[in-house]
Image (cartoon, rainbow, N blue to C red; front, side, top):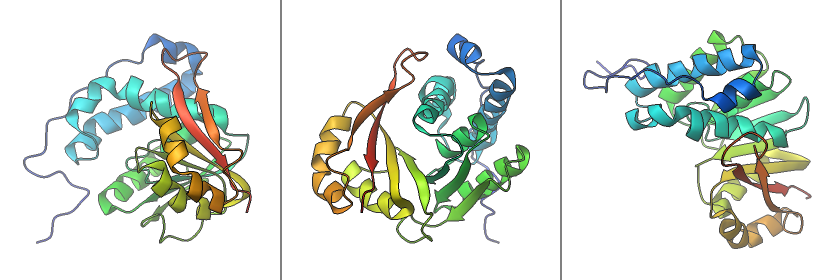
Length: 226
């Protein structure tokens, strides 16, 4: 009998409880937003670990490394925009953006079935339909999203990622890729790919979360001009 990807395997790791939200989260988010983020974090720490969507070692740092970093990206997104999140996994950052920004329409692009099942469960849990949808498939194979913004986190090097992301942007839209200390280096390496879409002159690295995170996140921002 085939294994149901929505059910944990017999040797799945035992989940640990989500730590309480850190002070910066309590100070920054409205209570109802913080409650939703906390609930989503509990799902990641529980079902997410059991189903193999995140590693058990990530639970103690879910707030700092995952939830808050993804939420900070919202600063770079304008009101009422259409966002496509490439390789969203368990919803990072796309589902987090949908939870902290009720004005956004979000498309979650993910090839793995078990992750898509979890994402659909979260959409139902937080009543996010119809403004949030899942498109199962690899980024270069699914239907183009015609988004204002394409986001990504820990998916691929920027040179590869840009080739997957720009086809999902409308002309005038922009790529927002969460990157770490190598953001500038990856930006330089992707120069040829960025030029193909008219993005090479305006592409750059920006920071988000500087006003409330101990360590702001670095984002490569690149507009599609052709």
